[in-house]
Length: 158
Image: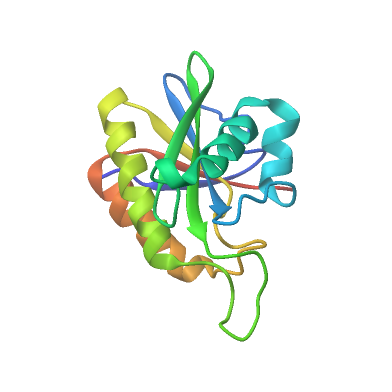
């Protein structure tokens, strides 16, 4: 069992040795341009490029809620584009976060992290534009990652 560490800093600059996976939540509409993805795109073009191509070809692939694509951006860093958000706006059906999809994504990320002995780094996923609550996300992170021996660092800006 690994613990979840919370630090002040930038999740796009993970502070750890060895292989690292940066996890974040994407929407299911193919929209990329607000929130944490802006910081990712400032640092690397590959995750956005891969996400847009994955969405464009969705009739022929697994793009949809609960799916994950891992995109290598450095020899020791991959970005996990996790589809855990339905749409982009809070409306009559509540916030766009889909906790079940985030949970499925986290288990997939955990599998990848275990296979390559990677640590996982993230902002408070799903709690920005997706409208989720950390009290609901944190137990998912702990079960899918920490509880399986994957070290997790959550980055708070400031």
